[in-house]
Image 1 (cartoon, helix red, strand yellow):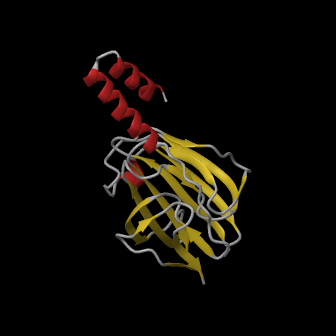
Image 2 (cartoon, rainbow, N blue to C red):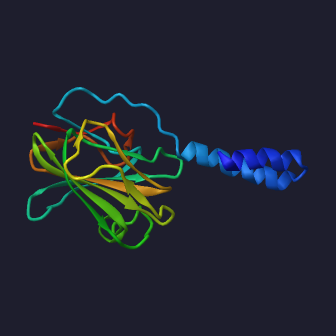
Image 3 (cartoon, one colour):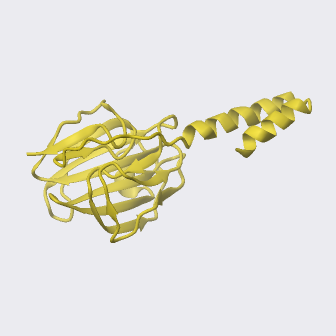
Length: 194
């Protein structure tokens, strides 16, 4: 990683403060972009977290006139920022929405912030999940395209720096996650189908 290499060179050349700053920045970047292997559960009735972080909202909410529930997860800068699929299925649409960069903890972030809205056709019907930029995160990246098939917990993208992910599920899913829960992308169960 360039900052680490430049930090070592700077420290060796006698530029201690510059070298230390570059080494710290490089260590942060390596930590931020880490992508650990995860083993998702095998039960197809389960909905897993699409991201690492903390559950901040569990609320009844309609989507395009259909009743359901939304779970919001806040990602701090020290969390893994690779996004994963909450269920297996086929990507129907990926809608990029320009927007604001409010703090991802704010309720308005779900509607107003820059985001990718991913529609996923599953064996239980369509679900929706969002990669949402925050005040620091200025880029949401989705690696999948409409028509792609995805497995439970598969990597689908990245949000750069502090951010948020939302999952919307239609009626019929029993939410087991609670506000305050710390979750791991691809492994922690958020809900299960009755």
